[in-house]
Image 1 (cartoon, rainbow, N blue to C red):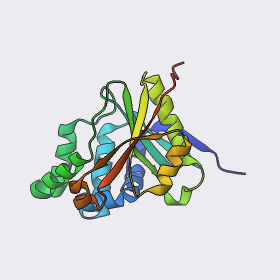
Image 2: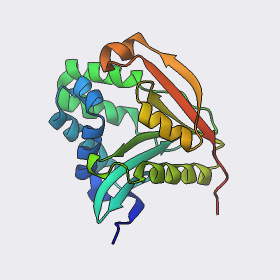
Image 3: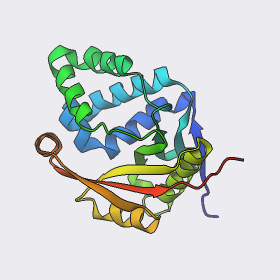
Length: 205
């Protein structure tokens, strides 16, 4: 019998497992910022702990195991407090490395319109690839954006990530703009990023 994917809001107990998923999925980012994956896991796990259960962060479950995740943020919802994020990095990396990591993190930040939701933390564990989990997570993210009365939903993707771009096109996302950054190329080895977006149907019940 085929396993069924269940998308649920992040629960209190998901922090450690989710930290491992995100640190692995975004290993290039976290190695650049934190030097090693173990430290990255500790930083992410600490954030997940003080965030607790989260209505805008979703996990995909297969047979009780976390198979993927997605977060939806907007100007008025979903953004972690900047002072808490800063304290987390500084506590675990020290002042010098922590300030550098926070600067690098700021390079990944994006401005949003009032009626725009943005997808982040979209990740699928390697053992669960090619099972439609990313598409299911994005569908849940879009529904959440509709519940928040957002008119559009967007995401950023490396211009070099052809498989992801192909998937997003199939799901109705279109390239809205291109961003070139020497600093992003310097720190994350990718200087060109694409913003892709699509309209959000009103899914309020």
